[in-house]
Amino acid sequence: MFNFDDANKKSKEALDVAVKSYSAVTKGFQAIATEAADYSKKSFEDGIAHIEKLSSAKSLEAAFELQTNYLKSSYEAFVAEASKIGEMYADLAKDAYKPYEAPVAKATAAVKSAAAA
Picture 1 (spheres, one colour):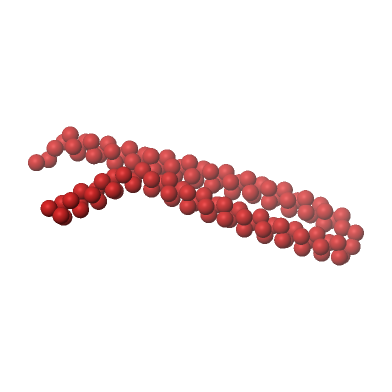
Picture 2: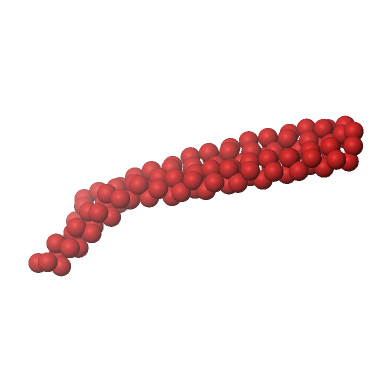
């Protein structure tokens, strides 16, 4: 027989889990967006500073050396930032799934006990 109280309780639990997951996703994307904006700002400022240094180079060799060093440091900074944002996305996925762990484990246990009976 259908029990409205049980259905209401399950519905409330499902909504609470969804809200917690949505909250974790929102916080994660907000942190990633902030990190990306900070990196973009720093990268732009570094580029402007590099152009200023490059324009004051006294010789072609000095300009070439400045350009080489800038490209190397820019590449290293990009790789580090990409790794950091990748880790942030992985953490976001874990945090978004975390509220579902308990209900999924409970449902799995219920299915296993029903199958064993």
